[in-house]
Amino acid sequence: MDFKYKTATQEDIDILVTTRIEVLRAANKLDDQADMTEVAVQSRDYYGKALKDGSHTAILVYDKDQIVGAGGISYFKVMPTYHNQTGKKAYIMNMYTNPAYRRKGIAYHTLEILVADAKNKGIDAISLEATEMGRPLYEEFGFVGMKDEMELK
Image (cartoon, rainbow, N blue to C red; front, side, top):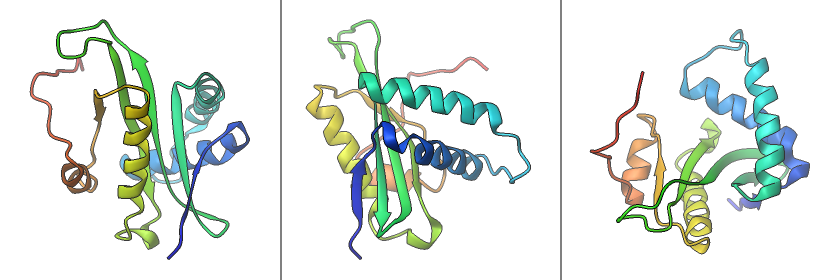
């Protein structure tokens, strides 16, 4: 199959928001009754600003005119450390492939595009949160578990 990988622009915000809601429903096992109105509003605002200022890159994957996959990467800066002297970091998110299109290399190639984008920006500190289903893909790509990070619940 011949898929088209497109870097999203401001014109794609409606598609990005719709895809974001699909990803969140799938990742959190939410049914169609879960109210995602505020998430959609905030996602639209996020994409509008982040695509404009370059702090986010989103990839949309098409089979002809149908969206079959997506992925994104957010860029941010923290205080520099010995291991990350620029403080630049990237976080991969919103990775999704339509169930009918899985196991065709779409997610892997999307990940390649996103990681290359980060590296082109001089960023080597790239992280993500993996679902159980996505973990084998990320491990195959070279991602490893983080041992020193904690989160406040």
